[in-house]
Amino acid sequence: MDGSVQLEMRFGASNYAPMPVTIVRGKGVYLWDESGRRYIDMMGAYSAASFGHCHPRLVQALTDQAQQLDTISRAYFNDRLGAFLGRACTLTGMDLALPMNSGAEAVETALKAARKWAYTVKGVAADSAEIIVCDGNFHGRTIAIVGFSSVPQYRDGFGPFPAGFKSVPFGDAAALRAAITPNTAAFLVEPIQGEGGINVPPPGYLAEVARICREHNVLLICDEIQSGLGRTGRLLACQHDGVTPDAVTLGKALGGGLLPVSLFLARREVMQVFTPGDHGSTFGGNPIAAAVGLAALDTLIEEKLIERSARLGVHLLARLRAIRNPIIREVRGRGLFVGVELNRDCASAAAVATRLLRVGVLTKDTHRNTVRFAPPLTIEESQIDWAVDRVAEVLDEFARVEAHH
Ligand SMILES: *Cc1c(COP(=O)(O)O)cnc(C)c1O
Image (cartoon, rainbow, N blue to C red; front, side, top):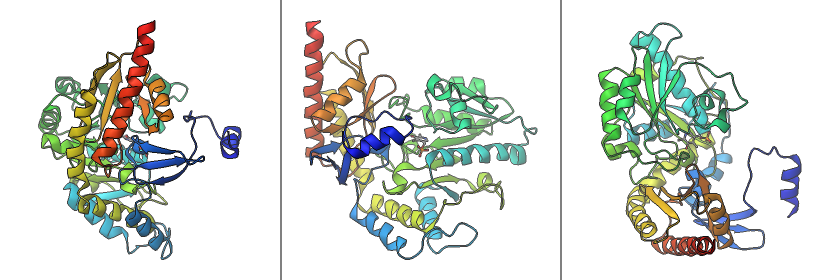
């Protein structure tokens, strides 16, 4: 164990249990540890590293801006924010955007907007707005957000939680319909659940949900923090269903892997509920974040990473599905966003991820005993093949051990 890890274990809170590797350098899809060993990053920092590590154009945007103007707060205009927000709105088809930093803050912004919209536009009685979410959701770690999580560990010990949230099964449009009341402000949903296990809903689910929301004057808010920006092979995952939501949250890849940059984007009618002083963030929309965010969006389009994700995602899914191994329960995903669920009584996804680390493939387990794959969208087909070969070998090892039992 090197000095840094010892210091982290000594002085750091234990809210993570990192895998046994210390990364010191990154370039493209590769990461290196302190002994110079190279790994392929099939995890992509939970989809924050969509452009590969230390993308030259993004690093340039960051360093250029850092030498020109840093944070000045939103008390003044800066000369970078407008272009970033404009580009984000044009690309997503939204009218207005509000910049924050972390994903959780963008979701909090969405919750505040939905509630105020319910009171000031829809006419819901004061303090009685309801927001419907899905079982298995992941929207971040604030008190309000974990309050409507269905994962006991995320909630236990952190109550009391804000009222006004209900949860329905993911992928079940009829359950949403049944849960809506005159007080319902919004339905908040991940088009594909990421942390929940890379859960892909039935075809047409989101389109049906959009119809139901429109019928009942309920806002449809898609949390695209993980699924957006090309991850699933479309700019937004909701576009697979031809849906334009009332509002969208973006984060993770929006900061190019360099900075926390998030956005809440919405139709004018929703965003106009915010007036000066209602909501804000010291660092949100700072010139460096805006410069990097704009460069990230431009890079996504100019390098055709969305198309690349669609094409290579088909390949990744096909290669993983071609692995014949009784340990595999299901392979699911869309674009370069794929989960391999393992039979719980055969192998734990965490153990498989640890073994993959040993053979040079970085990934991570998530809920439903699933190994997640969300590599940088810049990955090459041959790199995918190399990684999938390692996955097949490691699963074979686990199957052989299992067969001896
Ligand atoms: C990661 C994630 C968040 C939270 O983002 P942070 O930057 O960690 O706060 C919110 N929603 C979804 C769908 C996510 O995947």
